[in-house]
Image 1 (cartoon, rainbow, N blue to C red):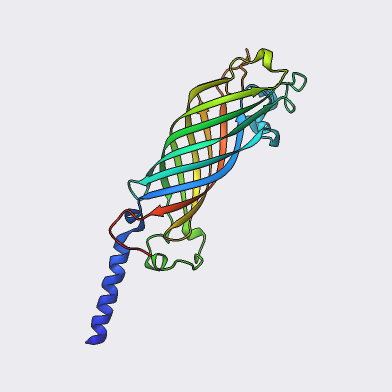
Image 2 (tube, rainbow, N blue to C red; image 1 turned 90 degrees about the vertical axis):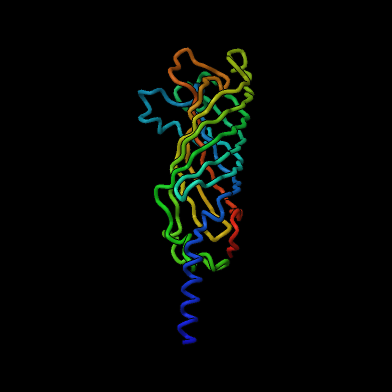
Length: 245
């Protein structure tokens, strides 16, 4: 009888832990990270007829860096809303592309606040298990079972300031401003334990300006675009009334 009572108590405890569901108890998450920027404007790059899908425009010469932080709230297990703050640099140069002889070059400092919705189309299998909730320092049994895959989209603003080189300065169309930016992208998150996640995301920003590199070509047919690759660490805050490991 005593053994049966113990088994029943253990079953009740395990069921209670399973019902807790980590995302319900820790809806609020704070993140921070670093990443790279890749800018696509009217300086540098190859003409359309020499550049299938724009692949040749991805270059180390245009790569710079960003730092980012965010505050995420999980409405459901699959849907989150994130306030993101990103700052960093863009770089544009004619040293590679179809206008090498022109010699334009610019550096842009930027700050981007944005509100981003995330949809998790593949959820991990570890997060809400009792074994996962109980462990703290043990490595995950299976990395693939601990990954979340998500898509994101949102709306943001972009504050920028351009520093043109001496060749570009007489032709610069605008060297500072504020414009809108539409983030779209995908990401993956490793659920490390009940408190921390690690993630990487890739996203494009489609802007409402053609002056973020300081120059608008007379032949330009589209606004400026930039890509961010971000590596982040996330801390999950206990917002429920259950004490989890």
